[in-house]
Image (cartoon, rainbow, N blue to C red):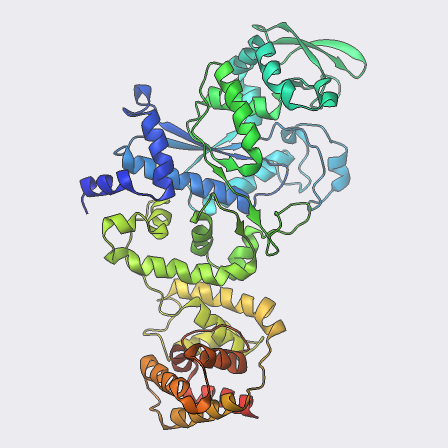
Length: 530
């Protein structure tokens, strides 16, 4: 594949990262002025620990970044992970220690509150370290930027003066969007109280825009104070716009719940003399009941939970797909995404370039600089692993699973197949928490019992080293025999899954029998017929 072939395919690819990247190419047809890197940004609120939403935003933004680099012929880019750690603490999270300590600091900037874990200089520093560890774990290429450090160092001072100079214009944008009660106290600037060091939500009067001086009421006393150098924080929508202008952000995506914020922050950015970034609004996740995921309800799925039951790659595939469509996020979708990731990956090397760019794995592998190589095929599907550990029971072990894999996988050694070994661990966890507690094998009906008995006879006569394909043919022939009364092969396979595996769905039975062993499969049939 030549660079010209890749560029030609990318220019017309309908894969969403390329569609997003073409917005930037239209904005900068000759590159960013002065050869400056195109700046991509993601935001994070460190009032709590990083979660799956943080991961998806950095991953998806990285996919657009890599697509832009292809389209632009390698133009320089940067990705900033911005932590909004100058925010005042509004509520004490329920999942942290020393709640009383945090309660005493309600309203204070997150970067100026003691760390309840006792490890870092502030609560924000703790959560920022968690964010960086989190992103580093997945190999993201990014630069970390702290809101608190940017305000305190004076990096935002010029932009803050711009807010004061354009005070009325910003108020004219924001006030019509607020409830009447909120209008009475709204201010684009939230000064930090010289007395209590809390972030104040009070009316503010501009005294001297160039010096950064404002006037406000601070616990009953009228105060004139400079808002520069970390002595203030902007309201959310104004802050977002100011950041776009101050940092020169060219691309940032956000959830559907921020649709209004994007519009209003864009207007404010233009008022400040800048341009809002290119933007993609993605849909929010739903739980298994189709309800919006809420931190308060706790009906979501954490990244740690996903990685307990599935692979990092499967999570990447789930997040890649259809970002503008609402998707259910729960443990039940993990096995399908694991297997489909490897199906996409196996196809990738043989696909023409046009199809490769529509393959999610092409984008996921390039996200961290990987361009393909060995190990593109998984010797056993995850669904087959789950069926194996299901029949082995709740006490199944990694060593036991690998002993069965030795009958099915060439060079069956965890060291030779590290990706498969990780999935064995995922399968054991899924079996322990979901399969074993609910496993139920139903009794076969008369025709099904006769077919099972016939299958047992065929297996008894089969060679011990019969291939998965040969065993599959045996199963097929019995299902097609009208004597057993199956309307379709689907009914026969469903009967096998429900009576032998305790599941309504399952793998290719020939593959399962080859993996589990003919003798062991005959024991399952005997148990079903007993």
